[in-house]
Length: 163
Image (tube, rainbow, N blue to C red; front, side):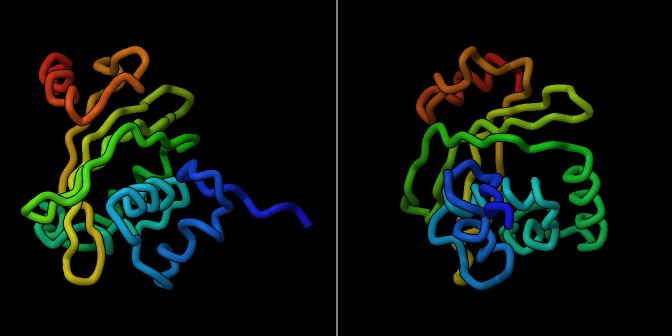
């Protein structure tokens, strides 16, 4: 019997010990970072229902028809490979309840590097943590190495990069 596959979120754990329980609805992600990791895994594994479920009610896609959003998520997830995720920085919830995670997502489309760094905001909706919004730096705007980014220097980098 082959070993259980590693989790796409790059946690170092096996999928069944990591993001699977969130994708299956057996548990809610305990914090914003865990939710972000589980969403990356959901893209990698094409768990589009989970991606929809973890959108915050104030996310703009929540005002659109659910089936349209699911179709778009399915197309994006299917067209890309997601080999690695790296959390660069994080900030616990502030006075408004917004937590922030900065991450570098390695993403490829037909062999072309589409990797990006995103500063994502998350809020708890009373049931669990949900993705509220994100600001990304496109591949051409990434500093070398991307690991040099922090939440403190990301806004400056985003303005300079034109994102």
